[in-house]
Length: 270
Length: 294
Image 1: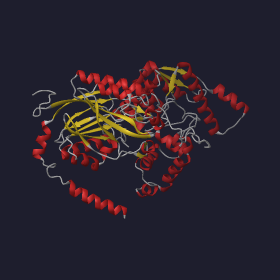
Image 2: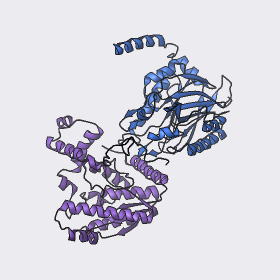
Image 3: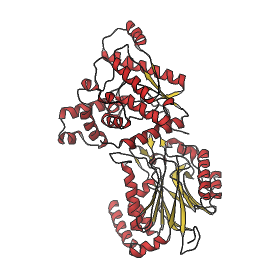
Image 4: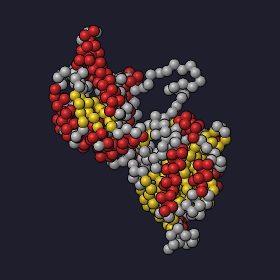
């Protein structure tokens, strides 16, 4: 679970540089939430591509998360990258005035997709590629909004657990205030990931690491001293979120079908 | 001591490891990359340049395999590269359409304008993120062949992780074992580098020492579909001593001088080659295989 942060930094920066070179893009754009993952991603992008080639979009809902906006702006200032604040409340409120709901998940998903929609539009305007910030923990347990915060062109962080991202963040010099902050998807005020999932990232990552990286069975993990309820809960989250990690299945009828046996690499001729 | 001479007693050979990042599926562009690196090696008076696995095509080809396959005897691309092998021998990787519609992951040894040897990858990794056997036919042999520097043998990437394959080259009299590779890095910890780096070095050290041969490992760099190829090309001498190790990420040429006298010197100290008993191993293997079939 421990990482060598400078090695990881090198690999991820050369990944970012390589992908941008292949697709002939200079500029990167990402949503800056003021949290850990997007801050780390901004630090890596600024190092890989140069600060003038990185755009941080700060997309709050009204002033619900005032501190986060300030933290995101501080990251942008610290790195010398461009940033812009757009309040998503007018778009989100207009929609929900026609379809009112108090369902926090529906409202949260709508906000995540509103942010995605803005990122894609500005990326087209700026000829920039969107950097994803979903980490391995979130991807595995499905803690993300499909077509929302999970949408991106490339994802440099998707093979690092939250615990490992914290280690990388400290090495990169991410401000201490952000390092100490309780992780939150920013779906509603006072929401924290750990509160919503009911487990700490430390607990989740220890179990996921054994389950995924070390290919241990649920039985073996429980036998090693982890609470049965917790292990089973995490295994269920992983099992039930496969749809978020895959392209949707296409009904195969023809002799050669997209996604089944029409098989070309993403980096074709790159 | 003469550098690069054919004098049998004093023989220093400059070898160039071309740690490149080919463009996936773009043979024409990769030909230019090869010509560029060969030219640079020739200027530095290298006598042998070694490109990585599938250097003409890139690795993660999938259905592109059928579009980039070539027949080396007829290929104009091969003709251009062969022409440059008059004084500098060249090892490169490509997709070979040996029989119509049947494709191999192959490497070729070129010398004096000719194809001296073609090796077809035998062990096609097909598990997890690797799916070579879906797209390639497996090769069936490990053979050594004469070069101006002694007998050589070729292996491609996963082939090298079979100590049986390395033994066949040893028993076949190899003085130089050349491994071309497109090995992605996997696994990480507090230590610098990928966990898999050690696996290749371990094999390089062990095989060079126990076969009393040079082991040259040429791996690629760059990223394909998110996989990072871990570079780190290296050469071990016949005493199992690391002579050179390239960067894990940088594209570029790494030069190393091989003193071919070390082959003889190591075999005087450690008579592994003299004492080898391939006929015993053959008979034992036959018995084992016969039992499988029962």
